[in-house]
Image 1: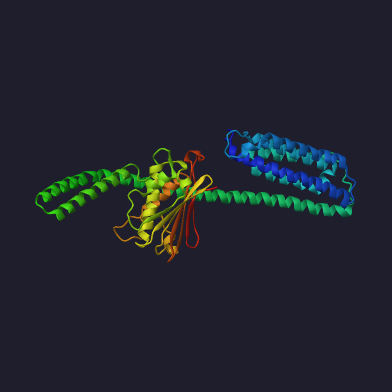
Image 2 (image 1 turned 90 degrees about the vertical axis):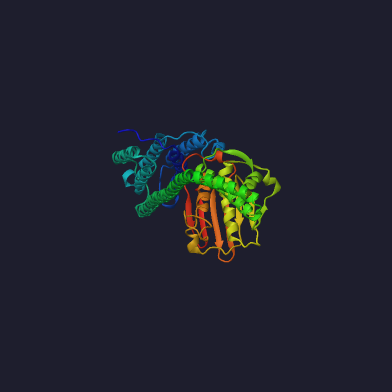
Length: 451
């Protein structure tokens, strides 16, 4: 049978969880011995029992020192300098636990000790933490250990009247461990299902984005020629009108030419990837990013910046063009929603390793049924000809693509606030697929990456 591939991250989590569980086991074993000796009127070989428990204590101390001795390695969870954890190491630790349990049962009645149920707990734990091969090895070892107890063991020196209490406690302990393991498995499966759902949603959005990029590139190619023809004709018309001393019509022709030039610039951006994060990471200041965001926005409603001077000079590392385009789209949406006399407020704050940008308008807000669909491609509440419903969708794709998050809060009659969180250094983000979480509650739509 081929050896299953190693899962280092899972093994690292499991060894930490196992170490904490073993401390609880050691404390429980010591407490049980003391209760049996002093509360149940037992005559137990307490010295020998504590020597066996001491083996578990020393082994767990060694485990802690070997894997977690240098706490500085745990500052970053993905630090490559931490010790690699192999599955066989976890299996060996659990074999030691089976041996310790066998030793404790040998000194306290063997098969007549109700705590023999804890073999089932060890098997359940092995099933949770290890692959099938090692789980069967631990099962066989437990079976062998209990078989040895049938051949030889010391008598359980506790009065018969008190043994029922011991059986009751043993059942409670075994049941508690089994329930804990099953809940852990169920929780892990639920988390995995949620992650898969989020990954499918993100993949679907990325597929839509790729389709839009292809469509945009095709549109840019097809429209470049007729737009060039229109621009040339407008230029000739402008010259003719200037010669005919008709300044009003000449101005109209000049406006046509300017708007055609703007259309061609937009098409060039679309051909470069429809707003996807295809550019390389570069350094820029927060002020420069915000300045680039404001390029090309309408003069009204005005946009008020709330950006502390010290923060404006701090450095970011991200794809500046793509991120500024995404933020520009959000600011433009806020301008569309706001009354002409009320300013849109852009607030920028530092939050540790992330940058928080809030864009606030004082428009009519959005009802919950609209908020539930906001961000879908081609869904828009604007009047015909004012938008295609792609701005927020593309902005969200860009922000998620650099490891950020986007949250929309809207209250009918009070306006809407879009909060964007961006990492200050995109290159420091952990490599690998990102998942997005979308949840809606009342008048909130949330899009965020996991912890």
